Image (cartoon, rainbow, N blue to C red; front, side, top):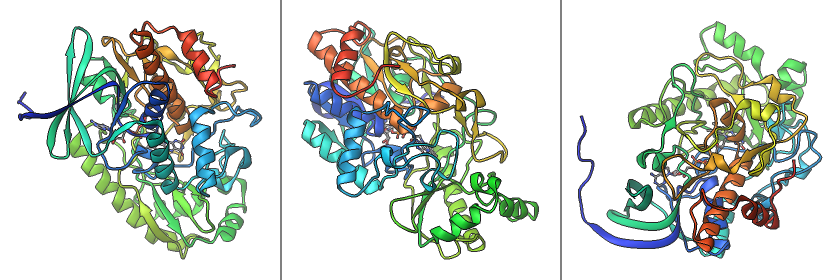
Length: 457
Ligand SMILES: Cc1cc2nc3c(=O)[nH]c(=O)nc-3n(C[C@H](O)[C@H](O)[C@H](O)COP(=O)(O)OP(=O)(O)OC[C@H]3O[C@@H](n4cnc5c(N)ncnc54)[C@H](O)[C@@H]3O)c2cc1C
């Protein structure tokens, strides 16, 4: 049954050139890029923290931003600037220093080279510092609840901001909500895999301290399999005895910056929809129960016997939900070939990494064709351009890609790079008085290159 969803008086109106919706990794960088390139930019974020999955979700490290051989850094720009600032605050290690297989990457061989371990507090501070320096108008605690569209363009967004209804009007809108929420409301066709049969599961990250790093390393070094599927034998045994209630056959653990501190990517919530309110509450509750169980189970694992919990995510992590249909849809074949796009806006090298919607098959299943990639692949500008709306761009995990291709480009370095491209494109549209679909892509590529991004395959 359709119902009127809200009523009330708009209490204030804000006008801007560019409105960025959602302040996760994509949105923050889009807002910085837009403002630095001269557009009056507003950032709307529904929580009180910027960074999205990287902060509220506690997810990390940043996956690789290097080519497959680990020789060339292929994602730089604002992303690299942010890491260098975090490193100065002793809140990150630059990916040029973390090398190939390491504890920072859960000892995984498959393209877990040149990762960036970081502290979630450092990213919060550095993102805020860069947003303020760039002159972005930041509205936290602001949920966008409606989209007003006229003649194929979004004219305003209605948001619930500090207990009142506010209208934000902008010339170019960037959807960085992760769930393509703005696009969906504006009538852009979207796709989402079925949670029961295909959609990647959700995971509540948590973070421990007081682990014994040396003992973990020694135990995991006992055999090759154990090194890459940490603790699998003990989990197999516990599962056979009915004492391991999580659909996962390894402990995904990623060393953080300090001795004894690890992030845990091990809970797994399958079959629920990340765009359904009731399911999201169930998913978080289930994730937290699994964290509680794991903290107890760790007492039986060498090196983790005395581990204590530091924190769990404020939000459960969503690997994928809605994807827009854009002017181009990136496919797995484009990664494997790789297709050399004339309108490339970012390079990437991470393989297709799809966690199963059912069962406990290994922590992660990588598509072999893409783990063996010798070359980098590109993301074209057209993937950021939704059908049906003229003044809208997207960036982050809701761009136009198949389920498989998104399984590769969803990692944070690519999300940052897409954010920089979308924000820069929006500002260039304001300067050149055109819409995102009319923008001269060569000009966009030139500005991105001048501002530190790489586009040479
Ligand atoms: C479990 C898990 C493990 C992962 N592991 C890694 C890893 O190890 N390394 C790596 O690099 N990547 C990893 N990723 C991928 C990566 O973290 C995400 O794909 C990426 O952070 C998504 O960024 P985003 O900005 O597109 O979306 P999000 O981070 O989801 O940000 C969207 C933002 O929009 C806001 N928002 C949504 N709707 C509204 C609204 N209506 N009004 C206002 N604001 C709104 C949200 O509050 C949020 O802040 C992982 C992801 C998950 C879930």
